[in-house]
Image 1 (cartoon, one colour):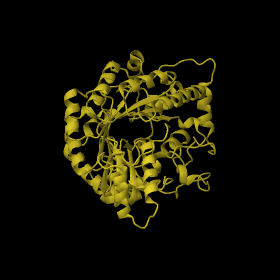
Image 2 (image 1 turned 60 degrees about the horizontal axis):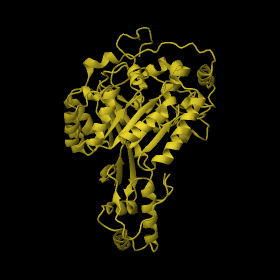
Image 3 (image 1 turned 30 degrees about the vertical axis):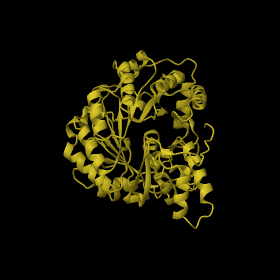
Image 4 (image 1 turned 90 degrees about the vertical axis):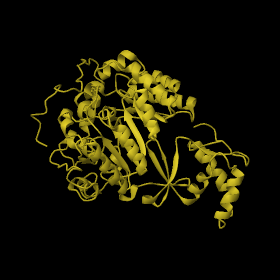
Length: 382
Length: 94
């Protein structure tokens, strides 16, 4: 956006500016909206070693990566995170830690500050202890709030990320008040996206349109109040938009994710698409994976598009939406994302929304992310 | 958004502590890095922000920039406008 004449828009110029390392899928929490794979427990033995991650960091920087996210699972379960942050800082990344807060002790927080970690994104699920603990399947609410205050006391900029769904959306006011009290710099009230565990539980999690409108009004009121002290982002679910999200800013344009086993992915969810191969940094250079691998070339540009995307005058804006969502909801990753009202499959989105309006909604249990909760054996071979 | 802050010549703007300004070889430009964001700066913007250290006054910055960009007669106004806009975005503090 160069509208004031001082910023030059950053399109990456073909470079993977955003590198996300999913260091592990292990996690002490059991969140029912988790976007990790359903078979997350299959990756434990394949996790990259410290030296392998360091090589990824070096090669990523050579490719022009600038922003670096340490994510998971819970990245604090890796005992080499301090060493990796130090290496990343030496290489010149802007380092972000994305954590549930579990395992972030005062000692480790100090050590991370010392090696130069730039900012921490902490997740919190509500302003209410019992609700948080129920939603994540562990007694962690008080700990999370304590960790949030510790992060600020250590002087880190902090993003508080609150995933939003039907069960907590009516408490946006309380969450805003808590975030203000903690003194967070950025509050992200992000409606969850429906992949993996969240898709499994979608009918119970998707809020109603009225809930979203009320929450948005509360956010707007809070923005007047907080001004510059706290930046508030409110992301509504793409199910309620009439156009799809510009997913990853386009396939293979600026985002590169490395999964725990070293697979280089255009986005974290891409393994849901059947028929693709996922080569890893163990066999290939990051340069080849990003620039030349069939996976990254698959949906780069717009050659792959079908109608209505192919001739749509908005295709430069949203790139046809999300390939994973197109596959999950229509069975074909080259289809228009059904979140788009122009999609011939848009009715699948409308059906999901209409379920939220049913008067006599029979509540169903939520499936927690844990080993053995589901079997993926009878799903198509990936 | 809160009301616009108008910088006076004696004000000493400084980059907000959440922001990191540095040269990025791969972009052949100065970039501003912050939690979950990157902004590539053009030369004028970079030259102004480099001087937002809390020590130089807005007047000092304007004087220096005038020597760098002699072809731009109205640069003083642009600088104050820039400070105002970036203050509004939270990049700099007064």
